Each structure stands twice: as structure tokens, then as C-alpha cells.
Amino acid sequence: MSDFAEFRARGREALLSGRAVHDSPMVEGSDRWGAAAVLRPEGTAVTRMTELAATAPAPGHWVHGGRSLHLTLRSLESYRARIPADDRLRRAYGEALSEAVQGLVPARVYLAGVSPHQGGVLVGAHPVDDTLGTLSKRYAHALESRGVRDLDHGRVRDRWYVSLVHFATPLTNGAEIVEWCDAHAAADFGPVDLETAEIVQFVHTGPGIRVDSLELARLTG
Image 1 (spheres, rainbow, N blue to C red):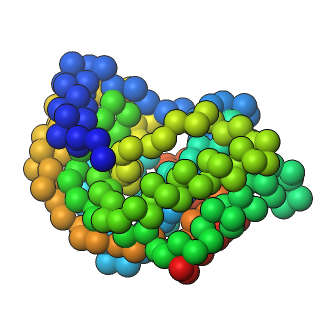
Image 2 (spheres, rainbow, N blue to C red):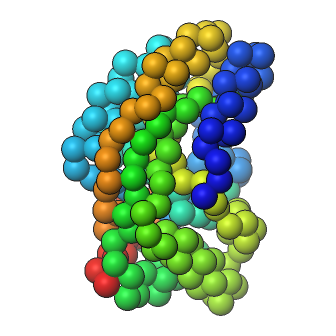
């Protein structure tokens, strides 16, 4: 697990020095917000993160909550507005995910700590066991065996998180965002079991992002 303290310090410095970046509504073929493999937490932790995110001083930005809260396992492709059920790549993503979860129990992570970063605000997801790492490696292998090249290009994720806010316009209150994150730096949402991995599509709703499930695979052990 990478050092979140160092990550947090870099995020604070970026916002305080005016180096924030922001997302734009998706357009066909863009590298951001294409189909992805994710795991979505459930339970009281989601309710608490949703309630906290709603208090962020982030008017005009994409504030996430409920079913839009997720951990990204793998970024799969450039953005497509339409991914039909019989799409060849969609089928490959789903089949690879079903293969990768075989025999794995739900992944347990501890959700704690609010951190600013260059493009928004997140909560740290700290693995309690090896399941996430194992699933990530298995999924990469299952995709490769099907001749599918994802946008992560083999990169192994060593930091897991749930995004609360994505900046959607140029940031004008970086110091205020940092102050709010500092006030919640020790936020503790507790452990959650991630029982389902999904292939999802992100949809811009105007004020935010909706996460639609395309394929799913359950971690049942």
C-alpha cells in the first residue's frame, strides 16, 4: 500500500498552489470515464460517505454518493456512449471478470481518511486482506489471455480509494477545499466487504455522474 500521508501532502500542495485539474462532460473516444471494472461498497459506510460528501464546499463540481461511490479495479477503454449487450469487448470484459473472481471471498477494505488530490477529493480504501491485489492480477491476466488491452496497460494499482468529488470546472476555492479535507482527515467509515465486481458505464447526468452496471461477478469463495 502506498503512503497516503505523502499522497495527501501532494494533493494539498497542488490545490493550494493553484494546480488543480478538472473533468469535462464525456465525449466519444476520450480517455476519461470509459467502461471500467469496479467494486461498489454497500451498507452504513456508503450512507456516511454520502452524507459527508454532501457537505463539501464544491458547488458546480461532481459530488458523488450512494451507488456512484466505487473503487476502480481497472480502466478498460476510451469513452463510448453506447455499449450494447452483444458488444464483443463487453462480453470479454465480463467473461474475464467471472474467471478472475473464481474461488475468491469478498474483499475486505477499511475506509478511512479524507484526502484532497489534484482532481478532487477521496476516501482511502485500505485492504485488510490480499483479495483486491489477487483479483487485480487475475483480472489483468484474464484480459490478456483474451487479447484485450485495457487502459491501465498492465499497471498494478497500489492505492485504492473511493472518490467523493471530481472537480468539473476550474477550481476557485482550493484553500477552502483543503481546509474541509483537513477537518475530515481522520474520518473513519470502518470496514466493508466488497462482494461484487462489475463492469460499469459512467453516465453524465448534468450535475453529476451515474454508474450503470453492464456485467457483474460475485465473490463467493
